[in-house]
Image (cartoon, rainbow, N blue to C red):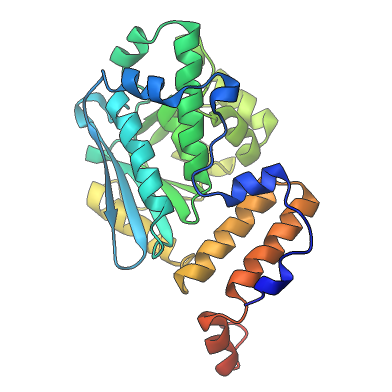
Length: 301
């Protein structure tokens, strides 16, 4: 390994944060007190966030609150953070599918919690909690895809933007309904949406002028593909097959690749190049590299 070569220049604060597993955007210096927020969210039970880790290196994260179209209760928000932490430490993982139970993706926040957390201070605290969680999710060294079946509304639509890719079933819909609720997206959805489809299209989507059925979403580049089936089980199989094309190879290589792309997205050019160099040092001369050299094959034709 090239560890002796990785001492040439100091890391910036931004780079250090990206390197640190579990680093968050907000802390007490921003007026964010995580334990206090967690205590409030514990008061709103209902539903679960389930994680299945397969031997293939694909994880399946399921939002499971079907009686409320998989809306996030307070407890589910806490469970999502727990699952993200578990995934951060899953060294054999390579890919992740996010889906909702019973053929719906997610309808955002449970209104019981929204009504109870009614002050601007509560809203900003919840905003910081979910931005922390979804930023950690976005930085996972796993290639992620949102499988949108049925409806993805509000916070559910925002969650799809934290994934690397999005797939939709033919009848599914994505709606950023925040304007109708008298607010704006607050889980990082606006920032990520602009990155995905550009500012002009984002304005159309966020204002409600452009309705994202599967056809429109595909046309503007919001999703990669519209799947053939709307059946819950069959569409999951399609999504798994679609994801496999990205995760061929050992976990350490796939994970380094995803980390490198994350740094390219979040860091300034010089910092991203230095981070790419550091990541190369974790795989150059490693088992996968040596095996490939021994086979004298640079790539598959």
